[in-house]
Image (cartoon, rainbow, N blue to C red; front, side, top):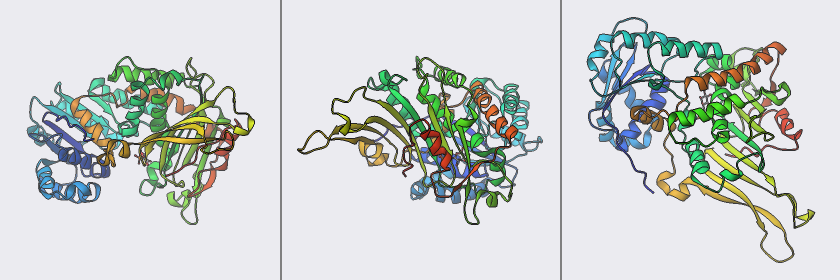
Length: 482
Ligand code: BG6
């Protein structure tokens, strides 16, 4: 099945930090892929802005090299590549002084969508926002895009929100959590709210528990300084895993529109109970010469590279159904999966020998995106009623054709949503604050107790205590399979 592409109107997109890692690795390749898909063509321009003194051709050369690595397939079409590069421009500009801003202002065209992508550290958010306003660049079609980390805790997130709110309205602010742009994450909503089959069972009466696993095989190389200040709780749990939890747990919104969806997500975060200290396991990877502490160059670091916890959403739908969340670096495989573990049938008519069987709905985010429903059937052949669990498997690549083998990168969807003006897959300020309000006491508790993370071997499934967290409840994690 070939996906339909609905072209967007011409736009101006300014990427502050345009020569930086995120712009080169994610944003520009995403724009190029959308360009090749025919989503935007005429008239649009992308302006890289940074302190480095390139001219436009110098910037294009840098982007050409990045695209060869990060959009290798599309780069095979040399004329598309050159045509894309011609739409790029560059302005040398200082975020903390007025230098270069007049130049930028002259490049922007009136009457069209004008997006400013803050691909820079949060300390520049304020100075950039101020200058955008001071130079008269805010129009009714102006939007800004900001990346995580959106704050380090509740206080800093509130301060950032206040800084941005001094210049922009909430519907002009697009806070990216790139997990929301992943194809399967959006599919989660399609599966839940587009089918009659699942929603009636989607509650504590039928669901025993839910597991959300975001396992990474990569470490933290190149980001040591940031990561050692953040840790897995701030880097992944407070945002990506919580967003997944919200989409699983939320009530059906009345419409698929930004505020309806975000209102429902917010209610989930607010319904989360504080997490009991004995319901959390922190871990730190070890490895011969390449353990966490060696990598960050601090033999005493107590930052966690792994966290697993048991959360409760205290509302009518979920009372009594725990959510187990885990994420970590340098694990056995890269694998992000949500498993909805249904309860056993109330009575087995096949007797004790048939064993216990329960349905599992697995939503695979990456790799091998797809959805599997494990159902129980009779093992073929004579000799009695033996039961066996088999997967009803819907791999998107198989079900929708080979062109869906490589789903679009999350940034493709999200950057185009900014241009279209659709905030559904972006976090609202109050959501981010509520997520920090839940996270902060957990981190404060570790600090107060002087908690030291449990070591785990690189290439393993994480610390043994995470298994115990489940075992104590008579449950176990599903495997981490690539
Ligand atoms: C980022 C985190 O937000 O997400 C990284 O800062 C993490 O630490 C990354 O590696 C994971 O994203 P993905 O899309 O590779 O699963």
